[in-house]
Figure: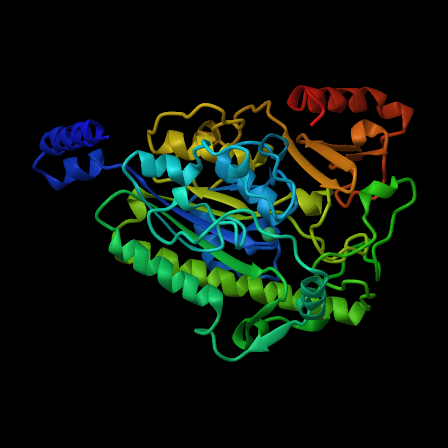
Length: 464
Ligand SMILES: [Ca+2]
């Protein structure tokens, strides 16, 4: 270990002495920083994603300076599995983390996470807010800000009841600076200021618009509740459309309207609160980006923004993400703003997925590629967002003894449960973007179903 440290020191001195005398040479030789911004339960309801009602000026500006991925998908529609998958660069069926209690290192102690890889290569890694799932932080990932991690005990019935009672009380509060997400942004700015003179990977996790949808009042005010849109397949409670298998729509909500019906008036109030939370998070992102600009770091910092999975706002009567393999459950906002990327300012319509982020950041920052990653670097799409792309996106979910697996190409979404034994759905996303008509059993689409099944078999050869 001592020898290694001395070698590192010698390497550092050689690198330091090779840096030229001019500022230009120095900045050219320095590694790019990473500002990694997560939002919890935010589906792509942003101005830059085409929602004309939502006020998101800061994320819209970020998208204008980066590549906005219009078909970006999470690997699992739940916090801990999707975040673990992204941060380890492996599918949930590989991590084995398929719920909100398990810690990946219990089975894979030696895996090197995305931030840990940067830490191992000379970066300061620091965290504030929710990056891994609450209570299951990963200490080896962070030089600063780590909390004690480990497997989390399953919640008691009492805790579940408390969550049910509190989760869907939307509220407009007065004091912005008391809110957790405001404090996370403040802490993020402090970290950027503290580490501005060395390569950093700073992760800032916002907890909204996750339930309960609470935000400062000023973010509610721009939204007229009467204008809040209900989906074409809005229902007061989870409802299975005709021709869909039972597994497609679990009959219980996980976040909002748990075990109770949503009236149309309440649904519009809830959507207003969800939008207000998005605008609140957008303002916090704006504060972080302002700090980068103020410190002159924007041109040497890769900025990532994402929501950790999709969300139902009443589609098919569902109000949560739990076990949804529909487009609204899997699709996420995902923006990469990399300094100098030729594709900046353009949207990208190719299907991409969260496991792609790890190899993308590794390539952008010139780090060696670790073994075991299962995604594909998106750097070709950052250079040319329209380049041909053969990779589909995969999302999985498990409940009781049912494993659902979904594949998304540019045109189709195909999902099957227990290898099709518990049913399957096929949607033509061009003709049916709200996923109202299941084509899986239509003989006219048998060839497409066979192709989709083949994609699933190739990605998940052993079943799981
Ligand atoms: Ca989440």
